[in-house]
Image 1 (cartoon, rainbow, N blue to C red):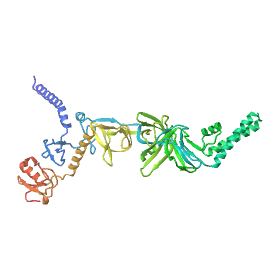
Image 2 (cartoon, rainbow, N blue to C red):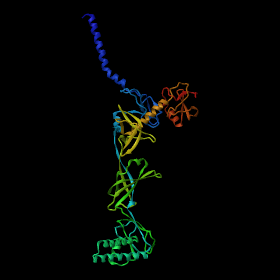
Image 3 (cartoon, rainbow, N blue to C red):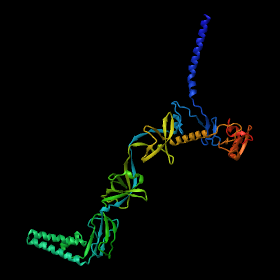
Image 4 (tube, one colour):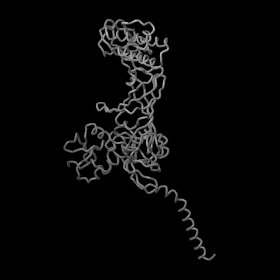
Length: 484
């Protein structure tokens, strides 16, 4: 074989071997190129403590955590302030779950305490229409149920005009009966019936009831006692009558409320005052009963308690609800369409509220939001989120802790002074990383011809036991002996 051909084949085989080796090693090289290298390791409990090697924190015994530079991700983006990148495996360990933010109309139920009250338009007051002395009183007391026409009491009236009115009534009755017997003309009969009605109305002005007037017409005997009877079926709210009492004209003796239709008075907080409208419905619960009530027009704002007093009306046919009873009131309120998130997704930071948003590739960033109305287990987001964002709803505490540690470490790295030469002054304790003024140092130690200053005797003791453990190349806390 000619020498030139052998040389050509040798060069060709060498080139093929080189290319094969390059392609075989390329994935490993690419992986190494894309593998993230930590800048340093830090103590999670004391972020100021740093080490260029992994290990255990000297003060608390915790595993040192790596800190990476904000190098570009595969998408070309960088980590935002406070943002963290967590692998899928670690997300599963932390129990992180996310949910999409959507825009929808919501509803919630407002629970308040209500107080039963009598319908003021259905309260009857039994009053004395003439002067007299009470002879007898019924046993009905405040809170008792009375029925219409039940006898409440009697009192003696000595008014001469009342006896004259009774006599005129008897005369009118006799005239009517005589006209019927004589078959008088209709005009005369109508006149006599009108006289009877006029006499009955006059007797009612003295307090005689319809039952008493019917008894007078039957017996034709004058009575000296006027009866008080219940005008409606209801509850006795007040009783101001006792035996032997002398009553004046117009004195209120009984107060009876018709509770078949009752009121419920509820109070809403000031920020909830716009949730209800007259005519809207509510549920009133007492024991195992549920009543349907409607919101009345009358509403009053109490500036002392900063509450809106709402009056509800409901039917109470069995009279189970009594005045001054407490009941549970529920209002169903519809919220306008807007963005809302689960309540567990919001971090309460005092004057501020925040959520963690997933931006993809395992990156989570904190975002400040403005919250609105809370309904059920959700809360409205007025500002800070957009429809389609993915927020963290579970594992938020661990994620927030991780974010705070990373943010504190990044701030400490930015604030840390650059490495100084041997002639610079000491600035930090090599054990805990705290800034130390050499003039106010709690102690100092020499190691390999250099001086280290400490913030406390405890740190100096730890350093003296194992100096090599705390000394790093170019550590900012070291200076030459004798230099401040």
